[in-house]
Image 1: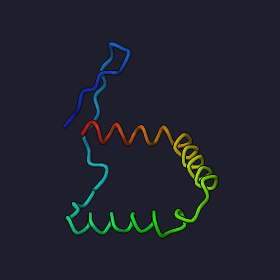
Image 2: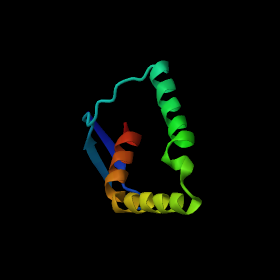
Image 3: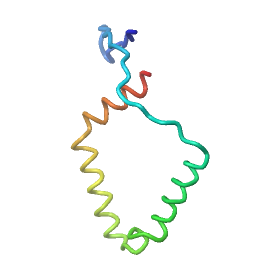
Length: 84
């Protein structure tokens, strides 16, 4: 199967092959509840809870730097998700 996409700001169209690039298992309600519980526990009982606002800010800035450094790969993943 092929998908036809218009290039933004151009009259050009491109064709991409619709090929599975990831296999993601379905989650049950129990899986979701366990994930939310783990995230909640990490937020309120893990290292984040005892960090100062300054330390949290440093972590968030580092996360922003990593997103910027990997912007191309993240954009490609987003296109694949959105186009499917």
